[in-house]
Amino acid sequence: MTTQYLTGDLEFFEGEPGTGAPALVGYADPLSGAEPYTAGWGHTGPDVELGVTYTLEQCQTWLNQDIAAAEHELDINLSWWRNLDDVRQDVMVEMCFNLGIGGLLEFHHFLAACQSGDYQTAAAHMLASEWAIQVGNRAKVLAREMAGGIHVPPETVL
Image (cartoon, rainbow, N blue to C red):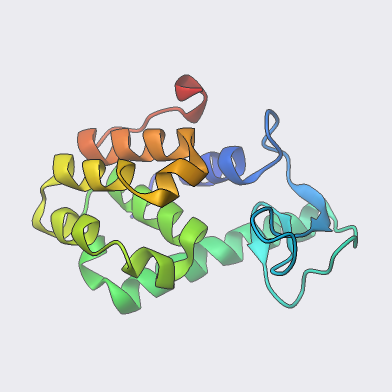
C-alpha cells in the first residue's frame, strides 16, 4: 500500500514548476517538442491534444487513473513491488508514472537491488542514470526515499 504523500508528491513534480498546479493546456513533450502531448499532472495519451484547455476536474481524474495504471503495470510486471514498505512502493509508482513501465524495466540493476532489499545500491543506481540527469531534484528525493525508507518532502531538496 502506498502512502498518503504519493498524490501530493506527483502533483509537485508533475505539475507546473513552483506551484504544483496542473497544466490545463495541452503541451508538446519537452524533450522532443512533439508528441506525446501532455496535460494535467503528466498525463499523456490520445485524449490529450496540443493547445486544448482541460478542467481541473479532468486533470484530477487523469491523475487518479494514471496512478492506478502505474500500480497495475507494476503488479503485472514486478509483482514483488508489493512486498516493499509503503515509502518504497511510492518510489516505484513515481518512477513507473514518470518513465512508463517500459522505461522502468530498463533499470535492471536498480530493480535487482531493490528486489533483494539492497536499498543503498538501488538508490545509487537511480542517481547514476540518465533519468536522474533529466529529472534533477526528483531523482534526489526518490533516491533518498529508496535508501532510507522515509518520506522526503520534495520541496526540501530544491
